Image (cartoon, rainbow, N blue to C red; front, side, top):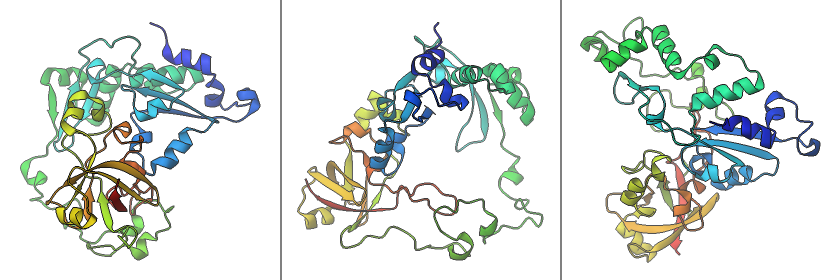
Length: 343
């Protein structure tokens, strides 16, 4: 099997970028390189117009290691094929339960598909990076991780299928109290000692409510943007990898915005009609759906349909803000104001 990582480095000459020597790139002009795994920023990041403009820069070289031809992969200079979860060894901790599960390799990957671990190790070797993990197989890393974490060995996990990490009943249900020396629960957060980003200009210790309650920092509706948009989860798409599968796409259908029937009537828009929705960050086209289960003045676009399922290729995150929300940062995907009109 050919080494796709080495091929990329030889053809596109990003080795000097990764090693810090940029004098021999594009006639001496500085070049920035991105290597992307497990992420689809051209679809999932907020303020999509800015993101797309950034990826379109002439001085940016982008290599994407992916399972699908995502929106980000389509803007890459080079795409490397990635293995899927049945094609490599891995270990999982699922949300909503406390089990460690083994995900063994069951199939040989097609063509030149490589796992994340194999690509990272090949890159490390190419640029001279050293770490014990670069010399281990996936199975060796799983075994090392389990032992160092106190959960036995890979052989034991393979024999038992899973590890139940759930504490005994009294601890799991806080019968014995909470994880403080006095065993009491804390209603009052210690904002000053939370490792939160400060780049958004918010002084956490001064402005966040001292006790749980409403903090009035939402992006409010106004005369120009009379609706508040929530990009809520969907039963059909877990993330932007699942929205590439034909079965999920068939269940989800075309993108649509759920609007209260009274709001549709006030706007003079029929159920199922095309609408234009926007704010200061951009605008998108999609279908309206009458939905009495939403409050008036609030509209919902479920999940994250592929950008190219929207007219013009502008997806829902064209409208979401990149403002870093306190106290931990991260985009406020469900806190956006918008206007809506008949398309």
